[in-house]
Image (cartoon, rainbow, N blue to C red):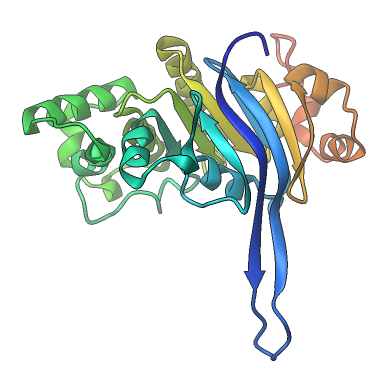
Length: 277
């Protein structure tokens, strides 16, 4: 890292107690195991690993949707779990999340305008007209129309729904966006559109992005740095090209060997994500 850290994750561990129904003692599942890293402002950090390795649990803790058993999340010098409930609610305007499922993450009962405006209730006394203007601005930023605010989720394709989810994440003008498998449910051509949109927004707004994926080809296209998770631990982290072309850990090499997208070299000299992920 060459610049200041916007986000610091310090020794995060998350244990879950699993109760058995047969009278045996409960056992402990360690979903995240002593994970530490920092993310520079304006950069993209990719987190990769197989399903079940702890990526989504890590994202939920960073978003303060779950609490760690041990460790802390520091955002702009503030430890999130040391904040009061009210202070944390205010702080959430600065970090937002885009979830994996573009169909399940939008409430079908509500119009798009209400869905996109939801994070504005985290704090700030905006008038109705100000909220309407912010919704229109967010929709237009992601390539939709202001008039789409009156429509409902079922009227949109999967790619459009994910654009709506991104608009919702951007409406508070956050400094950090966490994308948890945000393109994995989409067709390849739509994946490319959404990734291009995220990178445009990153450059335009100096967004910091934590991009969680199992697709190494996607990570190589967009991430400045990449961390590899295995069984809850962060086993390797560094510049994306270094990690993916010169892996230091045996598990990272196994991921690379199993990833067909890394066999396709794009005209830019980067391996391109053209196979399914």
